[in-house]
Amino acid sequence: MKTKITSKFLSLLFLAGASVFTACKDDDPDPIPPVVNVLPKLTLELDHLAGASKFYLDSTYTNENGDQFTATLFKYYISNIRLVKTDNSIVTLPNTYFLVNQDDEESMAIKMDSLPLGLFKSIKFMIGVDSTRNVSGAQTGALDPTNGMFWSWTTGYIFLKLEGTSPVIPTVSNEFTFHIGGFKGANINYKELEIPFNGDILTLNYNKQPELHFVVDVLEIFKNPTTINLATFPSTVMSPNASASSLATNYADMFTYDHMHDE
Image (cartoon, rainbow, N blue to C red; front, side, top):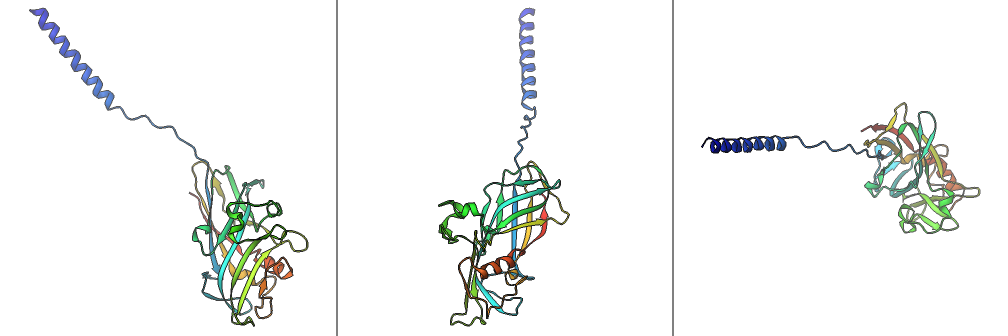
């Protein structure tokens, strides 16, 4: 009789212990997942202005010469982006060709990912498209000829388009059409820029997504070093010529670094 009671008691004790063990096991915290390091991303935010005013299509502004004008189209290429480290070494970001269109707000936020790590003090890029891509045959993406920024395989890409009207232009329509290109000969009109971050340091590290903000002043197209008088300047510029070069030299300084969000 005692043997049966003892056996039953031991069985109950075993089951109780097993229950406690199971309960403790279920209460254990979930294992911590491994940290996945993602290469940094970077966004270039472009804020189009006309002097101190926000720039919009179909709004009227006054240029350096005192001429009123209204833009109906504004597009340009940014390409060949490079970052300058604090030790002055340069990191080239491959295949960076972007078409910025005033009529497409998303295009004014240039997004890049899988970037190298480092500390950077300035950025370099080109307004326009380099010589190699101008003669590389049919291309896709931002460089697709269907984007309306291409003349032909001999004259190449249009680097910047500005179209609109001005009451001072002595034609029936008062229209101007500035299509700026040229990658060879006497009129090479792509412009190489380096823009410092004015003492700020861009940190690219794992899992970071910083933003660089730039002001783009459209009025610079009409001034410095050449003040454009819309009444006398050619109202149609659609080939790589001296007038196109004057406009390109003007717009070479339309970009200014403003600030960064170092996230």
